[in-house]
Image (cartoon, rainbow, N blue to C red; front, side, top):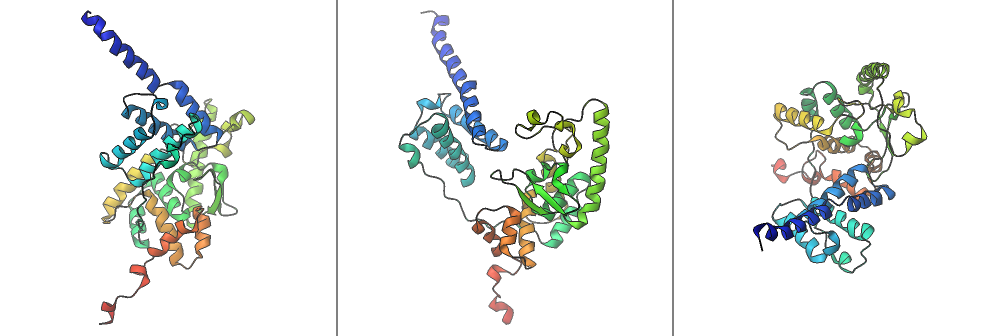
Length: 330
């Protein structure tokens, strides 16, 4: 056999494997199954990425050729070699369970036997009111406004960036959060202190939108099938992003806020590993410190389970569990 002939087999096998890994039919089926069940776009992106990593880890073999041992090996590698968190490992497992159970239609017993990683009990990082004031004081412009809004409403970062003009009600002092975690809407307050600066911000956004319309642009992406139902809505003011990005068709990217917040924490000299989500933790803790009912806080945060909200009772500004140290009585 010639050298060229000896290479034909491996080359063909690699080509077939590559097609299976990037098989558009498989990924299209995954996306279609997720959309049929109304999973969020973020979840769709994450699940598809985990499925691709799983296939790549096993030498580009098709998932139909793999089973329990291969799934366990992949998850073990994530935990041992890549040292991912338990939540990340469980996210990967959820993606693979969806692939086998909902896309490939696998009903074999091993799916039920897969073990989820044990979630550690973590106390969230919380900033004091003075620390929040210090960090926000180190921020400027739109990034500061977004951070103030996150702290003032308890929204997640992406929830804040996905706000549309119609979701902000200055008359009722309300912000409606559409399609939050679990695809559930909820209502939170619009802080009085933010109303003037938010009005000025929206006036600037509207001027830019008017200029874009005059130039034949000004369209934004609409959720779901609304683009087909309301063909002209994507150019209407009420559907525009509150925080548009450089390309106004899309909202501001989360990394812009995350980077600015990280720099502000560093500049303030606060010795805490705080990030944007810390503002949500601080919002909940400070409400409880002010005496608000925990179920009210649960509703504002959008938690399904009260036990999720209860974690903030352990980080109230009263020392460990609110107990006075005997050393203070000496």
